[in-house]
Length: 119
Image 1 (spheres, rainbow, N blue to C red):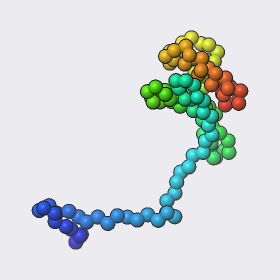
Image 2: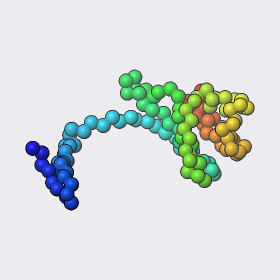
Image 3: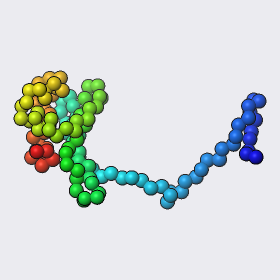
Image 4: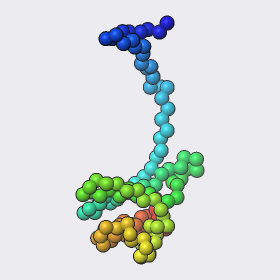
């Protein structure tokens, strides 16, 4: 019979917490490298994720865009779209709230091209 305890007329099963030894815990660790860009209204964190199987970074940069005014975050990870933004393809500009936001983001993308994180 399980250990039971009565509290205010209700019966409860006593639960003994399982203690996990540190040696038993296996963590799945993903390595990455990043570049962080500060603009007046946004922070852009560009990052690459390491592929342990082939010993190199996965192709394609991801960028977390944080709006400093609202603390809202967007994740942008489409390299084709990013390349088209740099090329000036108008239909790609819908994501930007202002011309300044677009100009800063293009500057970030051009730096990522310079360091070979983006084509």
